[in-house]
Every structure is written in structure tokens, then in C-alpha cells.
Image (cartoon, rainbow, N blue to C red; front, side, top):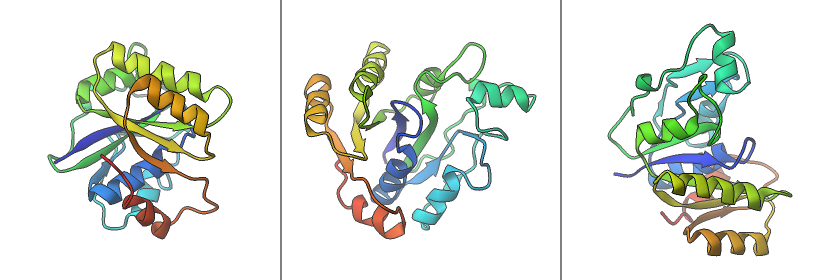
Length: 199
């Protein structure tokens, strides 16, 4: 039984694609604790389409607006509370965070606090853009500083071999997977990558 949190170095990094591949490859369940906006056609929707065999657990908080969780919750008139998050299964599970590690959940707590609360190892997803090395290393350092175990890293999108090599050497994290820039993501593409993961 393996359970992992998939965390990104920011938003629109490719966490859902990476989560789908890991869900398929590990024959895991999937859970997104907080969904902000796109409740019917959000990340869980894509997991169901790309990995039809997966069990998808409902979000603890499904918020109406595509904003930072604390802002979306405020609009919906609720407060996100860490104690309400309970891992939904003892089976193999992929947990996808909403946004980056320091995204606020309420007035005082962030995704970092949720990671500590769930107490699962993190798989970090990085994507190449100007500044992404810095963002990846900052994400790594804050997880390390707080004693959070990291299972490895996924690189997504356009390849930057020198940047990726530097990140792997600096962090010492194992490479779980490299996902190329694909013109389309579908069930077959997810299944092909699922055979290549190392975790």
C-alpha cells in the first residue's frame, strides 16, 4: 500500500496529469481534498476520464470559485478546517493538492499545514519555465525544512535537461517520471506513461 501527496511548484504545473499517471500506474484511488471552481468538470472529472478504473473520492471542500482556497471558501461562506480532512481509504492513494505548497487554506494555515496533517510523503511536480528552477528548489527546501519526506520529482512539459539535472543533483530526489509536452492528453497517453513511473 502506497499513499502520496502530489504537490506542485505553483499552479498550472501539471499536477492533475501527473496524478492521473500515478493513479493508473499504481492502480491507486484518487482524492483531491480541496477543489476550487469547476466542481463538475475539474480535476476529479479528468481523472475519471483518463483513468476510468480508478476510485475517485469526493473532495472534502468543493468550492464554487476558481480562486485560492481561502478566498473561494470566504465567498462560499465557509471556513476550511484541517480537522475535517481525513484520508478516505487505507488503499493505495494519490492525493492532489490545490495549487502550490504555500497556498492559503484559511486565515492562518496553508497547504503545508495540510501536508503535515495528512502525514504522507510528497511527490513534487515541476514544469520548465523561466524561474522554475528557483521555484522548485524553494518548494524542496521548505518541505525539507519542515521534515516532510519526499518520494521524488516529476518533470512535466518542455524538457530542460540542464535545469532538470541541476535540480536532481541539488535535491538528491529520485526522478519518478518525465512527462513530455503532448498535443493531447487522453486515456491512452496516460496509460503509456503509467508503465514508466519509478516509485
